[in-house]
Amino acid sequence: NSDTEVVLAAFDYYREECLHYFDGMFAFAIWDESEQVLFAGRDRFGEKPLYYFVNDEQFLFGSEMKALWSAGVPRLPERKMILNYITLGYVQNPANKAQTFFKDIFSLPAAHYLEYRPHENELQVTEYWKLDKQALISMPEKDAMDRFEELFLQSLQKRLRSDVPLGASLSGGLDSSTIVYYLQQQLRNASTSYKTFSAVFPGFEQDESAYIQQMVRTLHIENYSTSPTEAQLIDDFEKLAYYQEEPFPSSSIYAQYKVYALAKATGVTVLLDGQGADEMLAGYHKYAHWYLQEMISRYRFTGAKKERLLMMENNIRFTWTYRNLFAAFLPSHASIALEKNEYNRIIQHPDITREMMSLLRGREWEGIHKPVVTKLNDILYFNTMQYGLEELLRYADRNSMAHGVEVRLPYLNAELVQFVFSLPSNYKIRDGYTKHLLRKLMDHKLPHSIVWRTDKVAFEPPQKQWMDSPQLTDYIFEARQVLVDEQILKPQVLQKKSKGLPAHAADNFDWRYLCVARLLQS
Picture (tube, one colour):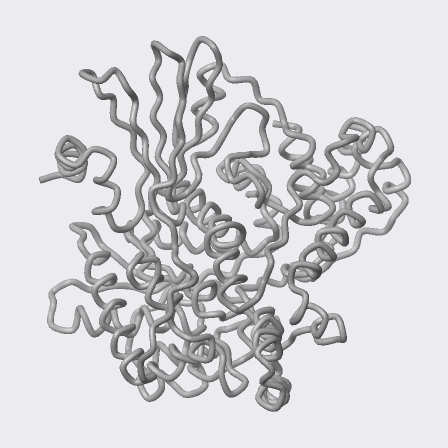
C-alpha cells in the first residue's frame, strides 16, 4: 500500500501510459530487467527534479546535482548560462529546458519521460503531456466558479492525505488565503489540526502582517511567523546556495527557506503552498498589457480603453506605449523585437569583460526566447510551461527538502489547470482586476481587503534595505572580486558603489554577482 508499490504496479500494467494516471509531484526511475531499459518520469509541471549525465560509458541520474558530482561527474559551470543570468536575470534556458548551469548535466523537462538502453547507449526523451492553450469552454461565470471550486477541492483533498502533521504557508495574499480557507473547511470535523506559517517584516512598507493577522482573526487559525534579517542571510547564504545548487533571483528565496525551517521546527513536515495560481489565473500585474493587446487585436477598442482606466484606478502597474499597439497587430514582429532587446542587453552590459564575450562568441543568441503572444493564454502558457513557474517550483523544492518538509501544491492539478486555461481571458482579468474568477469565488468567504487587494505583486522581503547594510555591502564586493578574478567582470566594477535594489527589480546585478561567485567558489 505504499507509493512505490503503486507506481511499480502501474508501470507494470500501463508501461509509460502510467504517467497519465498520476496526479501531483513525482520524479522516479524504474529498471526493467526483462527489457533491459531504464525508465524515468517527471511530473507535469516540474515540482520534483531529475538530473542526469550520459557519456559513452555510463548514465548517471539523481534528484540533486550533488549526487552526480559525488559520483565523479565534473563540476563545470556553463558560462553562457552565467552570462544570461547576470545580464538578463535568466535562471533557466527557456529555449532548452534540459540545460542547467553546469556542462554535461541535464534536467529531464517537466511532463517528459526518458528511456535509456545501456547496451546500445541509447537515450530517448519523450513528452507525455501537453497543456492545450487553444481549448475554449463557453459557460456562465457562475458555472465556471462552481467548477473551479469543485476541481480545486478535489485537488486539495488528495493533497491532505498524510499520516504526519500538516500546515500551510500564509502570505496574506489571495492564493494562500484561499488554501487556508478550504483547508479549514475540510478539517472542520476532523481530529487533525493544522498550523500556518508566514514571513513578516515589521516596519517594511511591503510587510503583510496586517493581512496575515486579519486571516488569523477571521478564521481563528494558529499562525507562526519568522522575521529574517540581513545578518541571518549572510550567515545562511552558503547553506542556501548549497541546497539551491543553481543561482536564484532574489532574497525572497531566503525568506521562503526560513518559513520552511520554521514549519519543521514546529513539527510540521507536510506544507500546502500556492504556487501556480498566478500563472494560470493571470495574477501578476505584467499580464495587464497582454490582455489589453488581445482586446485591441480583436478591435475591442472601447472595452480596452475602459479596462485600462480601471486597471489604473486599481494601481495595477504595467507599461503601455505605442509599442503595445504595434505588438497587438504584429505579434511575431514584437517577439523578434523583444529578443533583439535581450541580445542588446547582453552585449552592451557595462560590467562584462571582452574575455567573457570572446569566450562565448557565436553563442550570444543562445537561450534568448520570447513567445509570439496573440492572446493572454499565450503568455500564461509560456510562464506555466516554459519559463517562470518551474523555476519557482525548483526553489521551493530545494528549500523544503533542505529541512525535510514536503510541499504540496493544490493549484497544480492537471485537470484544474487545463480547465482554467480553457476559460475566456475575461474570466481571468476583468473590471481592472487580475485573477477575477478566484476573487469572485472567494468574495464573502475571505475578508474583502484580501480578496480585492491589488498591491500584492509577489512575496517581497526588504532586500534593498538589506543590501545597503555595511555587512552585505562587504559581501557584495567580495563577490565582485571573485568575478573579476574569473575575468567575467571588468576591474572597474570594484570602484562602483553597490546599489541595493528591491527583490523584484529588473537589474538586480549585485544579487546575481553574489550567486555566481558562490557557484564558482564551490
